[in-house]
Image (spheres, rainbow, N blue to C red):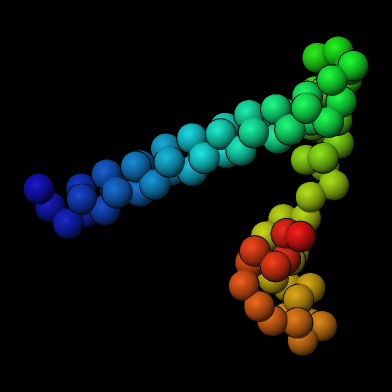
Length: 80
């Protein structure tokens, strides 16, 4: 197998893993919202999940804003 083919396969696996991790994260947040708001119907939980997604900064925005303000640290401290 050529190096290009190997690289393409690796990129495919990484992209697939990214999608799987995103899906797992969405499922975990949905479950978290269900536990926090057990009285709400699925429609309201979905709306809360959508609002949560819309309010989250993108990683690039986090990195850019932290570097401009002189804040350093690992990524886990940025999501708190």
